[in-house]
Length: 257
Image 1 (cartoon, one colour):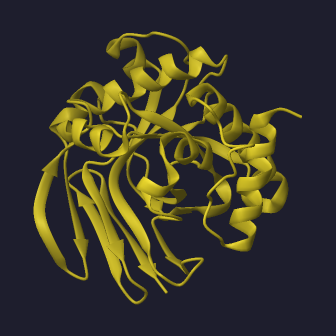
Image 2: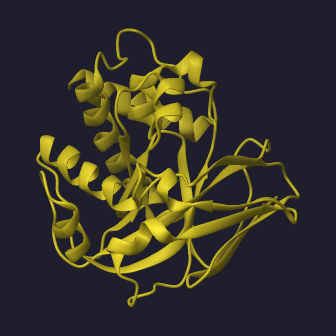
């Protein structure tokens, strides 16, 4: 067994036990290559444990502030599992009773495979629908305690997703013109533009295609891609509700028990 496999098994046990995912030095990934290998192995373990199947990918750290805060020099990716993916709305109980975070995002549904370096136009042509989405995140341990490589191996706080109705008429090349509004218990800071995601949400997809290609992975038809936070993560304590809306894409909701 490799160090990546050992790290994946340790992270899986931490999830099952609801304990902090801090790894012993003997199994902790040494770099991002090992971290991504461990994450892929973790996805297999979680799928076998009832959390799957894998439905796509998320892109994280899609602005300079997020990268600097987490010690990264580029975005990161993680797998999305169907076990905690919901359509339109969801009511979730946080595993440790401390609440969950939500990020306002856009979701892309792939119509064609994609891997390696691609242009923004090629990326747009591979998409068949767009939806509004929330990524649900769980801070399983403080970032400064976990470190970047363990965070990547563990899935970058990924917990689940809520995805709105798919819109097949929107031109993906115009997604930089989208605005979203995230409300928590009716309070909002107003609309935020999708340009918060690397200047254009399609830049997240072109980065993901190139990054997956480094590991001999590819986007497949039907895959869902969450392009990254337009509004930074907002924490929901038990009893709170979040609603996300965007003109032309409808609205979705999440309640946390």
